[in-house]
Image (cartoon, rainbow, N blue to C red; front, side):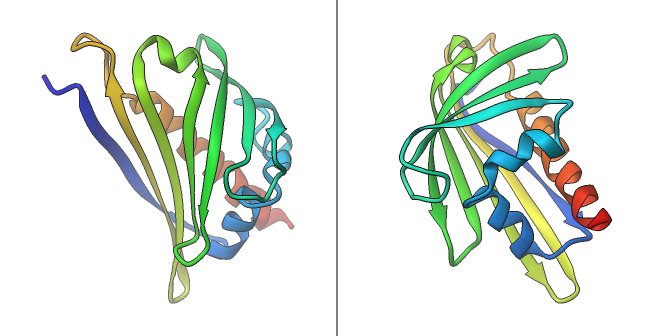
Length: 150
């Protein structure tokens, strides 16, 4: 069984792609208010909310797992993508490296989110990080519902 891999999904959104990217680049502090069932808090440790290379720490709740993740963010404005490279946290018990990518695209009247995780497992017994892709989907769906109410 391979230790390196990537998994992901694409979901259709009701709101424009730009709205999602703006949240991830500059307004991530709003995510715990919108997706409070899973994201309990986020704070900047280095940099700020919108600068490439900033470091944030997230507090999350996923099933029976309560944890923190320290990540360094990279932004790709042209492709409306935010890449979160995990630097520390509970995920490192299972993975040597893990990187989540939120990419938003507008296709006519429809917008989509491409949600991907690239990872390296610590050993062959570790499962692929499907549950974390599920968390990414939940966050984006919560944001979409929030935007629809506004």
